[in-house]
Length: 466
Image 1 (cartoon, rainbow, N blue to C red):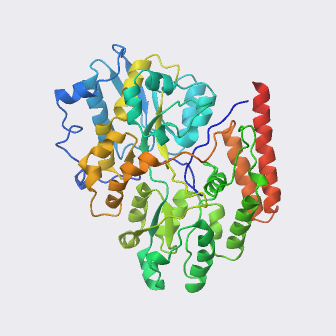
Image 2: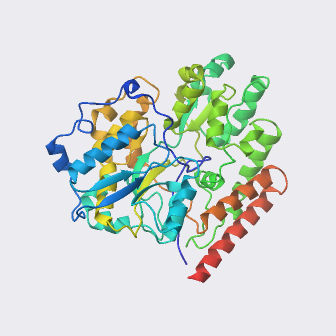
């Protein structure tokens, strides 16, 4: 029987793509260091960056990032120029992919036998490609062959998604998972100070109704992106509350056996029925949740800080009022590694060393720190956090988080969502049964029992096929 390593993603949200929002114009990127090694490299930099051996002479490799062009095309072009100077004779072809349909485009490229050599995959997408056996084993290619390089990567990001205990990706850029932004305009109007906001989900449920009553129906305390398929959000909630998702040998799910799981769904249904949270939470995805917060009708937004820019774009007045609060945590009080964007290499690439060299180059500390200067994301390379850009921080909301990042990513653990076979089907099962409970079509326990049974049927069928 296949055993699947549990990993932690956004509690109550999703392991979605964390691609940055639309970038500013080049001259409006005040953190860009044009005199640094990334934008102005020397021969010493090229020599320092040259770390992979046996790169195929004359190799041409295709690179598929998604949701980064055209907004970050000058940054990506500089990566390629630096890489080609570091490994003379190797050519990189940039093939930027749009966000819409990216996952299907990647699937189709493998089906057609023509995937790119280095592919940007969201952490929620990795499992299906690893299970299909089409990706390069990174525990062998880097972990065994270049152990010093392996040690540079954030461990929680390296192990964020594994298949049968093996990592098939290099972690690229990261996100904090649970940062709470508070709409200062609403908090001032209602007289709610930062210390008045609860820090646990157990307290937050009643707080939602209190805010609704106190504002006479004008505001909600928070909303949810329950319409998202990716990430299996309610199972993350169970992990955060200390509810076991698997049995001891990870051969079956057992979350339905814990009465606390049904109690959580009962509480969600009460919040919906009493209009303590927006009913559109049932169908909203993360972007819609952020848009709703930006409209100024919701007090709290718990998400990755790389997405705060969407609030700024949608409503500068709300953005200017924001301040950071303590995120809600479950009873287990776990720290999430957050969303991870990854780079994967098809096992079929004709130039594995060149592709590996490029993936390592994109994720080296200099290249990643330069990206963090472009947009508020975080490096998967721990060496990045020695740079003054991270140690010194700055005045803005996102600047204040940078000095915390090194310790955060060094200590975050993976104790969350699971990598199921037939992941897309499992996502549909979890969402469908979850919504059935919240809409009253089934009781919470009936929905959880059906959810667990259907998932266990998939696990059993998968074991039989082996």
